[in-house]
Amino acid sequence: MPELKFSMLSAGRGSNFEAIMRHVAAKDLDAECISLITYAADCKAVDVAKQYGVPVRLVKGDNLLEVLQSENPDLVVMAGYMRKISEKVLEHFENKMINIHPSLLPSFGGKGCYGIHVHKKAIEAGVKITGATVHFVSKDYDSGKIIAQSAVPVLPDDTPESLAKRVLQEEHNIYWQAIRDFSKLQFDV
Ligand code: GRF
Image 1 (cartoon, rainbow, N blue to C red):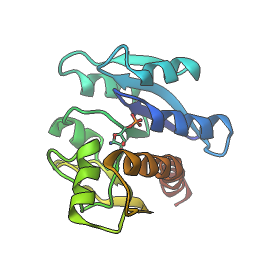
Image 2: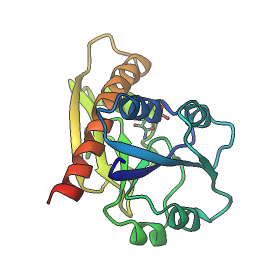
Image 3: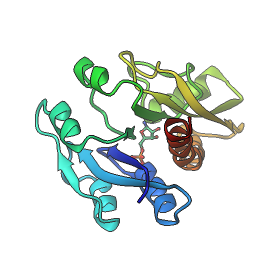
Image 4: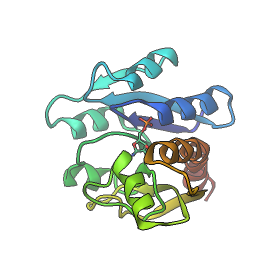
């Protein structure tokens, strides 16, 4: 039985969820996804959950804390969950909620910096390197303690879309490893 039980919070395309589940299925990530928690019943992440036999829990209104407490995961893994997490949820799951962001934080993070906007800003700023960051979720957007980062070059002819694609590949490379590292820290000390 895997030691680490995690719940996934996702409400969109679900590609990070899919990448993580591929590593769970391949057994190079010793963890069990006990639920996908979402507010979007027909999002692609739900299809991923079905494909991997992960139960789906639907959040209605403001009951995320209730749902999370009944699931009681060791770790909450967020990707593309576009709702602000309330302070009471953060209090209960302090240092147990992680998120992935498509830039090298603290650059290009914070309110309004999501999706394609992040890559537009990186190109506008003229940075030569961007990347992906896994971090703990905290009160302010994208400002929790950083767990893992990986750099991605910005090429001269990059568009926000081409850059987004390259960064996403890197997200898929690092997220499952960050979960593995979290699980080692939790259980090996
Ligand atoms: C990712 O780019 C992630 O960095 C951001 O939201 C996106 C989610 O994509 N927080 P997906 O649903 O995992 O495909």
